[in-house]
Length: 206
Image (cartoon, rainbow, N blue to C red; front, side):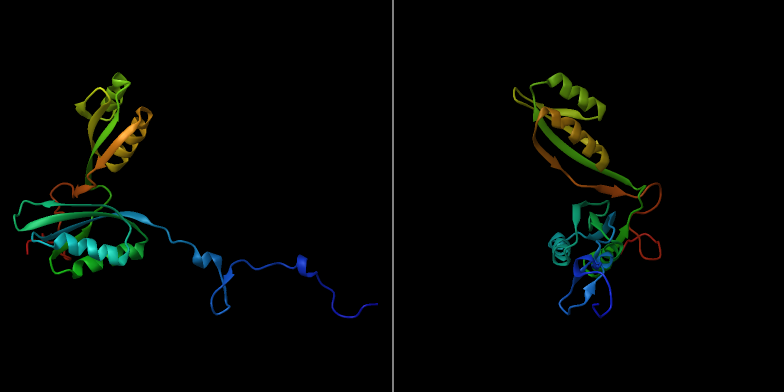
């Protein structure tokens, strides 16, 4: 008779999940799971002066925020410009992006816009011209208009939500897409609500 405790052999023993870190401690794989991200549209009212865009883009580059699009343009005030950023980040990353933007001296106001804000993007899509009637039929489906037509290619212009343009691009793929350019998202609050506000909700005018 063999002495000692009876139990499963080495091959039959359960193996814990996860890996060990540099200290030899086993890490729970659930703790390493990627956090959920969401799409956020940030509107920043900034002083209209040289170097502002470089400061903003430099900040996002250093912090490695995941930028989907960035647009900038003048506003109703000649001394102000509006930067619209679309980012895809976990909740802490979105809050950090807003916090870091507010620290920049040229930034007057930063606000995350609600999902129902007016959001539009413009795209130019150049496709093959071997089936022009079908190209124009697809263009009509998405309220697009032709801006250039030749023997080999047709270029259409489409304006709408990001989702609408994504769907249009997919529909035009059957004709062979030669080139695409997209402006990125521009957004404003609905109704009489101001897009740029101070932390207490008042219009940002300084």
